[in-house]
Amino acid sequence: MSDDIIAEIKRDYIYNLAKKGKRVDGRAFDEYRQIGVETRIIDNAEGSAKVKIGNTQVVVGVKIQPGKPFPDTPDQGAIITNAEFAPIASPSFEPGPPDENATELARVVDRGVRESGAIDLTKLCITEGEDIWTVFIDVYVLDHDGNLMDASALGAIAALLNTKLPNVRYGLGEEDVPLPINDLPVAITAADIDGEIILDPSLDEELIASTLITIITGKDGSLAGIQKSGMGPLTFDQIFHITDLVYKKAKDIREKYLEIVDDQSREEGKKD
Image 1 (cartoon, helix red, strand yellow):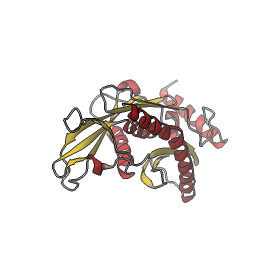
Image 2 (cartoon, helix red, strand yellow; image 1 turned 135 degrees about the horizontal axis):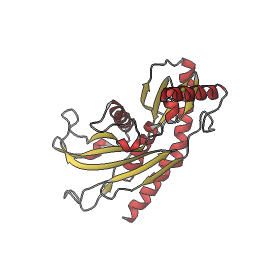
Image 3 (cartoon, helix red, strand yellow; image 1 turned 120 degrees about the horizontal axis):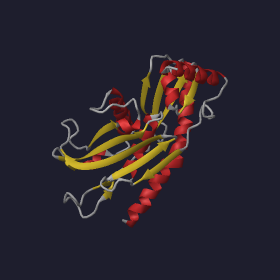
Image 4 (cartoon, one colour; image 1 turned 135 degrees about the vertical axis):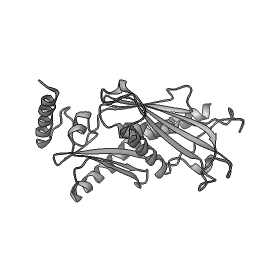
């Protein structure tokens, strides 16, 4: 049986289940797979985290180096975000420079951090107009089973929460200090499968969805970013429904994972 036939059978199966209010793995439409967050897993990074959502795994490393400010923001630090799709993570990933999917993922993660004001960039200015700290956020996909956006965004914030400015290494102070974090943005992705809206789509669900939409919100409910892919339209009712789901789920994930990591990082920082 060819791969095309198998794909067609699988698509029909997922469609039919969705019409009955079910998913292949038995989850409710608004239910996430199990989430796991580990921090400080890379010794050579200033901050790091590994996030698992079901079988999807990403590692995020944060490096910080002195740099030069942009001309229009002479008193602010800078953020540079990259994503690597290694072939070991999925048969659909190819070796070589980042493709459009890796670029899109990096931009969405970057937008969530930047637009939410998660990092107080004014506190990353060393000498106005001359020297700043530049924050490099690198996302590495280890296993791709869907919803890389949410896993990567969650990993980025978890890694930033345990990041320290390397003052000692660069002779800019007598101790390293935590990165100034102002917000804990959370990205939530929804998929439209034949008119049914589901959260945290698996890879099979992503492949047959007409639309994927990722919404990033901050602690106060402010909107930090939206990314839509796929040619399918969304009705106003669907958008309102997705928005309601996003705010509830983002609050839940922030409280269960990021606020705990934030508290642990603060306690560990007191001991260092």
